[in-house]
Structures are given as C-alpha cells and as structure tokens.
Image 1 (cartoon, rainbow, N blue to C red):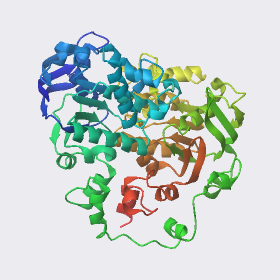
Image 2: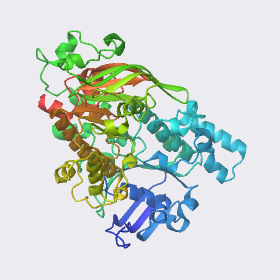
Image 3: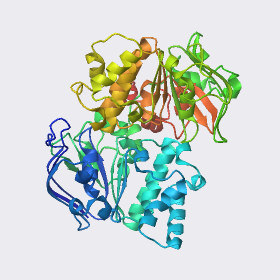
Image 4: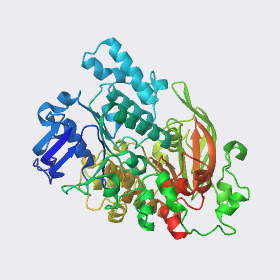
Length: 560
C-alpha cells in the first residue's frame, strides 16, 4: 500500500533559503495493505515529516528538497499533491484547529464531500456514520469554537472519515483526549482496520494507549538516522522510549515483554513485594479513608487540609458559574488550592477543565460566584496584572509564540514584566531546548514548541503555574524531565495546577487530583486514593496492582 524508496528530505533553511540537514535520509520501507502501523520516536525525530510524505504535504506545503520515491496505492504524492491524494489518504493533524474550515460541526463534516460533488443522500449517510463512529452525534450543531480540544480532535477525525480513504494517517490522534475518549477513538480505528481493511498509520507518544493494537512499529531514532522497523515487542525491546508496563517488564526481566495489563498479570503472582506496614497509605485506606467529595467538604474547602497545614490559599473559588453562549460549562465550583500544592485537574473532554484554568488567569470572567488568585479577584483584575505572578501555558502553544527566535520569546517576557535581562541557559537546558536559542519557534516540532511556551512563561519565576495539557507532543524522556522540573518548582514553594489527560504524568508528580464531571467537582482527593479508586483515571502500574502504594515503575522496583 505504501512504499518509500531511497527517500531523502530536507526542510528549507529560513536564513539561507537552502536545504537544511536531512530529516529523512535514504529512507526505504514498505507498509502492507490493511496494516496498523505505529510511528514512534523522540520529539523532533521526523515522525510528522514521514507522515506528511504520504499525502504530499511534504514537499508541496512545506517546501524543501526531496529525493527518491514514494508510492501510495500506486500513486505518487509528489506528483499528485495533497489535493490529488485526498480520496486515497485521509490526514488528521496534530492540531485539529489547523484543518477546520467551518465553525459548525455538521458543516465541517460535509465540506470535503461537497467539494467532491457527492450526492446529498450519500453525504447524509456518511455524516451520520462518522458522528456515530466517533460518539459525537450530540455535537452536530455545536460551534467548533465552543468545543474542548479533545472534542475538536474527534471532529477532525470524523471529517476525514467521510471521504472513505484507503489510508488513514493520524498525527498524535489521542494527544488531547481523555483516557475513555482515547480508548473509544482507538477502538474505532481498530474496527475500521479489521472490518474494512483500512490501512492505518499513526504517530503517538502515549504508547501505553495504542501499542497493543499495532501490527508494526517504525521507531525513528532522530533526524536523518535509519529507523528500526518490526513487530511491537521486538522493537520496544531495543529502545528506551517505552510505556510503563514495558519498562517494568524490562527492569524485572519479564520475557516476553507484556504489552497489555492482561499479559502482565501472569508475572505479578511471582513478585515478592513487601506487605504493607503500619502507617502505609494502603493500611490507612483499609482503615476507612475515602475520597473526599466536594459537596461533603463544603464551600471553598477541599482535601488540601488533610494534606498540608492550612496556609493562605493560592486559589480560592466559591460558587463559580460560567456559560458559553448560554451553554453552562461550570456549575457552582467550590475549590481551594493552598500555596505549595501540586494539583492535577482531570476529567472527560468538555468537563470544563480548560475553562476553569482560564478563570484562574482572568481570560474568562465568572457569570456567577467569585475567583480569588493570590489575593486578587480575577473578575476585577486585568490579565496583565495577574500575569506578573501567574504563569499560564495554554493547550495550544502557538498562542504564545510570535518572536523570531527562542531566545527572543524569553526576552519578551522579561521586558513585558519589567525584569532585567538574564542568562537563560539553565532554564533552556532544563526544558530540553539547549542549542535551540536561535531557532524560529514555529519551525519546531509540536513538543518543542510546547517547551518553548513553557520556558517563556517560567522565565519570570511566577508564584503560581497553570498548565493546560503540558505533555502534548512530548516523549517519555521529556515528560520525565518536565515532571522533575515541576517537582523542583513545588519544592521551591511554587503552586502548580495542571490540567491533563496524561495519567502517567499525574502518577509521577501530582499529590492531589480533582476530577471534573459535567462542570462540577466529582472527586477531590490524594492522587493514590483517587487513582486506585478509578478504572479510567489510573496509571498502567496502578491498574496492574490495584494497590495505592504502586503508581509508577519506581514504586514497584523500590517496593520489592
């Protein structure tokens, strides 16, 4: 179905106009019809570039220099360009906003079919099927601008499926989806692959979600390097970027390596894990501790009091209500976050997580209730004033990036906040951007752009750090570095509130979890309690052992 033969590609160098160093260098590979192929590797290794070659976006949209041959279903994407490949290859981008045309979901789904001149009856049938397949029928008349990032991602996938392509290419399709929605999307892809023989090629950093479905893995080590290709178990045994379950298997010598919880269960029976001791969290749980629900805690008082000595709150919210165009998103939120806490906000797509975060930085103002952040009433305080003490990194890092280099992004923050010029080498090294000071931010990969936005916010050393999906586009090594960095910020007395669907990151560094459901706080409690009590919002290791002592691989290795 797909064949690369001696393909070499270089993006254009913005400064010289000449070809930069090759991202793909003499690449040759074959993907059989009906395969489910997973493309993995470090952020910036060339995964997205490989995918863009399949429908001709490379080189037609991005320019640069290409040598060699690509064939997809016998067609040449370099000759036909994306328009000529559109009926053969469906492409879903990392940023769903990048491929939206209309602002109403149903109109977005019919747009491409109208361009092909399909009969009305055919379009109606395909729209209904796509809405059902992605479980978004309830969104059909909603405006895209009112949807959450995850909901927009599912709409983007549905709009591509209406064209009935032979090949479906997806660039990090679950990066903005909650665990349940990600499972539903992947189940849909597996069904399309099995029932219709659709060839699927996708890249993903959260391998724990998808690796068990893949027939073949293509591991991209780095720009210009030869990829490693083979069955999932064979490839993962040779690389370091692996999901927690596989890492656990490697460190404990399990063979064959487990890809699913079911496969790993047979190894756990022989593990000699120490029994809980008096004072362990597990013993406390058996003694009757339970998750504190917000309605039991009372207004503006959360589980923080059970975790920390009461201090002046960094965030204090009472009766917060907010609606988009009459659609109620937050329904009377009562919340208190004490200074120095590390809190993860989780929940289904559309539950109101991003809206809650925007209320804390003043980008949105309450329709009812009040929000106090570091002593400021956000309803009466400008965003500029709040930003002097609050660092906010939005879901889409492009919203913060407009300077000509990484160094200038950081310098702009310093000037805007009246801070003196400084040496940013340590910060850039900490977030993995060493050597990129002079790069144009929008030329970087999604994960690299995410880290530039984070650095641009943290350079002012804010007291409160608000992060919205900070691991979008980050590989496992970068996630571990981010977790370590954020924990260091907490030790310095900073308060961190992080909206995320990444349960593995939460297991690594958060101490408290708030689960939102339909605009209300459903659960508020210690991370070990909440994860052990949930089948959806739990880490792989916790799902395997169902023991609050074990959330991460290190927990298990150290507990032997």
